[in-house]
Length: 247
Image (cartoon, rainbow, N blue to C red; front, side, top):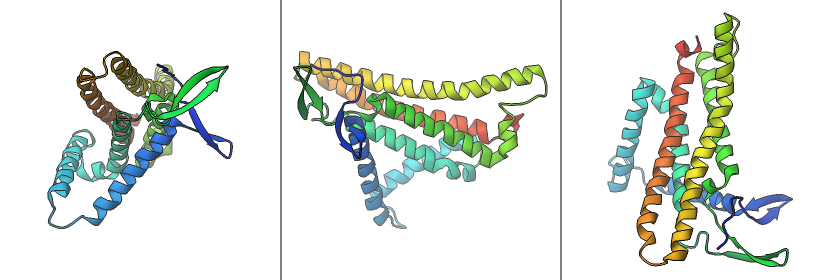
């Protein structure tokens, strides 16, 4: 049994390494894109069962966003970002639990030893993926804050000379933006990677029946982690776009 905390390289494109986690992330992107195109063609004024389910889920999400943002028009403005983060993280987490992920791969020799390299790996089990996602989230929050209340008002949350106390608090706010990236990335990475290690160990020790409850648990964890990541992004957006939070 080989457990690597670093995503393994499968091949290169123009000197750019393509890892097994990046490969599965591309698969998740392709799955969501294909599903969106199919669903778009089937959208009708009188919704069918599948469209009705998605409209109900969308309405619930908008209702949750309304409770933080206040207005439906504001919720609809930021819905694409929040829904995209949620669906992409959840799909990536669930694809990482499919049969064959982690068990189908290549065999290579490193330092004279045979090493198995899985072809696919859960994207969130790679710290590079979660850091990149966290950076996108926090940068988006600040860009949306600038667009909502203006550049200088948004910047005044971090840099102000009103008083020594406000200056100190502003610097803490600025540092907290980087802390959010670390917190976001390590929370998602830690939960997903720990789940994959647990499933691997249980499957090796007891390969039949026993791993099923843990698999269902990881399916639930994959959903919860996607929900937490997207909801924290929503909370930070709500704080950034309110003009009074800039004072």
